[in-house]
Image (tube, rainbow, N blue to C red):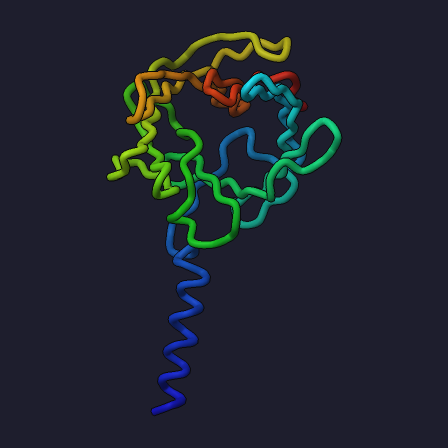
Length: 196
């Protein structure tokens, strides 16, 4: 009986540690999710500006490792991982339960499509979350053409960002084929260069 109990505890701890990351269907990657792709942004927050590069450095089973570093080459965060699930590009910082990943964008932009992030709970969802610091993201325009980093992108969609705790509205611009282009949030991003 003692050995059975130990075995059950071991299995339970393994499931908690690994989550159920193998039980969700990871979809095919988006066109820009390829090892070696890089985006360089000017990032501004509270009057401070830096240049930050995001680079896809590894891929395993449709999950892509992304690193970011500033103009001096210093890492700005730890590795994050991107994957597509349930029509959304999701991101997380540690290989764990993929259901806990934050939603970063939509894989098939349609006006009115929404996703959410609870600042207090630290989680993302395609459904509203009970959180008094809820951030709502909504696709408000598609099929736009813009110029960024000296290039024309004709497959751009706009995501409006609204907070439940103030009246401010911000916008993020994404290209279906090239990913995140810019944002007007408190921490703003402007694409400076892209290598593909």
